[in-house]
Image (cartoon, rainbow, N blue to C red):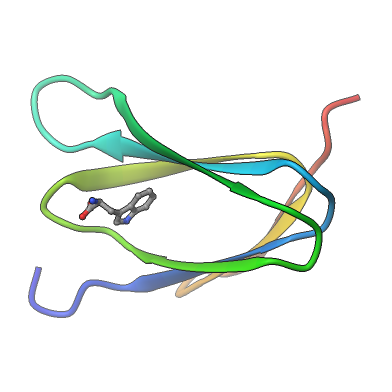
Length: 73
Ligand code: TRP
């Protein structure tokens, strides 16, 4: 990964979880970051992180545009 992309997550409620999943043969959670409303996390995909899971209401800004995740009902 020469130029790993940044992903920006902006929490729209308290308690949004940004969960990093491992790269490789098994895909496991390796880090959970909790964001409160208005907090922003700027993250990259790395040698260790192949995927991210966002739980809670947030705006996710990436090369694919802006995606909104929804709060659990
Ligand atoms: N140690 C992790 C890594 O280098 C840190 C990290 C990067 C991370 N991107 C992430 C953690 C996204 C959670 C979500 O891969």
